Amino acid sequence: MSDTKSEWAIEADGLVKTFGSNRAVDGVDLRVKPGTVYGVLGPNGAGKTTTISMLATLLRPDGGSARIFGHDVVHEQHVIRQLIGVTGQYASVDEKISGIENLIVFGRLLGLSHKAAKRKGEELLEAFDLADAAKRPVDKYSGGMRRRLDLASSLIAQPPLIFLDEPTTGLDPRTRGQMWDVIRGLVTSGSTVLLTTQYLDEADQLASRIAVIDRGHVVAEGTADDLKGLVGTASLLLRLADPEQTEAAVTSIHQVLGSTATVTPEAARLTAPMSDPERVTDLLIRLREQGIRLTEMSVQKPTLDEVFLTITGHGASTDDAEASDDAKEKVSA
Image 1: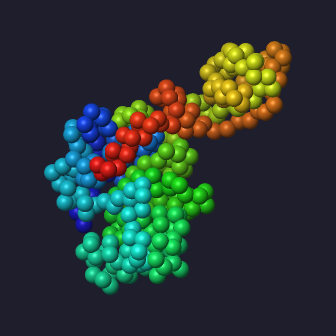
Image 2: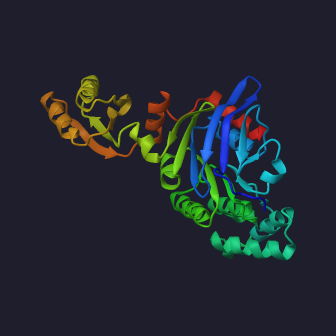
Image 3: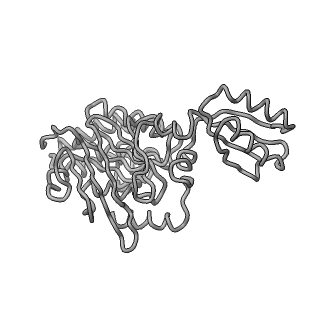
């Protein structure tokens, strides 16, 4: 295995990738410390997959530079490919053969003997709670089992750097929790993980630092608390008895809390960033004085959409054009 002694596991400066007229990645800078989970947060079409593809030497950058443990992604691809494991958004395993046979194939491709590949595969199946299904064809696996097998296949050579591209997309909450435990275990055992996700709670749970990418740019970077601080420590959710009082309620929220409420007109619901919980009492008194009645009130942590709305001026959902751009990324990768 090549030397991994470097101040940074990943260094990227001004990375650019274009597909025709679409500038999928437009000047991305990243710094990832060894032995950490680094989250890359963004909606579909933001450029996350394309960024990973360049860092993993699957796509050649059109501009900028990047290094993995000090090795250049353009000029030292053969070295970098010894240092990384990549798990994409969709399972890359062969559904017609068993779980253990899949891992043996991956091990053989990486230069292990059949005996060594089988031994390592059995260890990984045990670690990922798949030992009972080792000899079962993968097309009989559930979605969560396939994702765990796919992750296991990327670890068979125990790489020091692992790219996980939306590893929990489409998984049920229980399986997501299992995957989170696996990812924590990878870092405990000494690996570095770059994790892309659409879920703020996932990045919050796992990542020591997070980059927010939107339309090919890094628009914010910091800890989960740093990002949440941009929209307040929590959000106040109010539902009005009379939707016609929405405008007056929004004005009161701005005057008392100093924040701008997001309005859902159909449900007469208001969501407002809240940095000082003690001011909520003042707001409730103001609303009562104005005769504005509430049918619901709750406090919740910032959502992904609220973070994106604050940082980028739009929500995390994407339109058809952006989804199409994301599809181009996957094809090209």
